[in-house]
Image 1 (cartoon, helix red, strand yellow):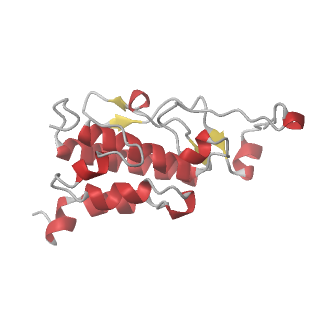
Image 2: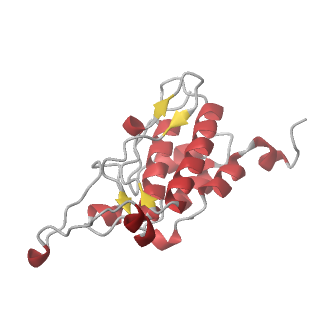
Length: 177
């Protein structure tokens, strides 16, 4: 029972796969969500997950900004101050430092949430959360640490490919009948 809440590992894997697809999709559209956390993931009646709340999202595609007629305004540009948007404890270190949120920041936040759902422990560098992943059946300890790389450039951009590594047939080398 993951996170001490009765979550089965297979359920978390299914949610991970669904969210990986959704996050890859929004990134392909030129959007960074900037607030991936358990409170921003909803369950549908059939048990699927939905990623809502794009209230603090950022459009990083110039063509998308033009298409939706979005304007980006730098507040307090003269003073060099920067507004940090997201939820404390759920954001990538570079975003917490005031750097621009990129798709890699969503990858980090998604990994934080996944570690918590699986272990019941919020990941912090040096915490025992990653050790707890090694006790699970699926290769989470190979997938999630990559997503939690300190350097955003080292985080994997293709979340669906990571989700495939967690599939039961990927572990056994066989396909389900």
